[in-house]
Image (cartoon, rainbow, N blue to C red; front, side):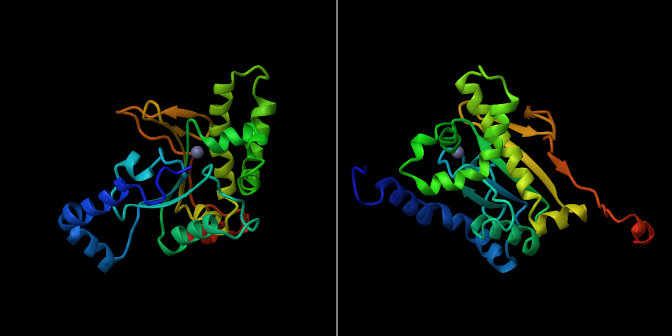
Length: 238
Ligand SMILES: [Zn+2]
């Protein structure tokens, strides 16, 4: 598959350029990040797709984003799978105290195409198994969208619904549920349109394109809440 078994020379050149001309100018910043520790603004769960780089899209520098990427920007529901995504969420919320979590899907997503064409995954059993966490999105598109929907529109709808499904999975994680109940966390659903560079954000009902002067819609802004009604007095006392 690869023309050359060695690491692509452009990657080596990039490392050399970073060490030679970039890092010297950022040495103090990196030292400060080690001395003070990281305080990222948000956790971003994005697709592993090489065209969807969260730091690039947001123009964020080192230390600014805690990033977790996987095929399909998937968040397994809590307890169903102990793995990297669950651990990244827990660490970001509990240890780093991030106040925002973003699930970022995108156009032309290979994982979503795999969902639409399961036969294409016959040689990729791990991918097929991983994508079961997106089956709810697939069913939503199958049953709640028109039957004659154009394949391109279907792919887009699937990617958007998948972001919404993964936001729901996020809420099943105890660290996220607790932070939401304390009013210390906001959830965001994003969709990056590669071909136009447009970012669409979920407002809790639908995705809207971000304009230069528009505020970024938020999927869920939490406010402190307790379901137990007889605790009302102690809430007021705090
Ligand atoms: Zn993707």
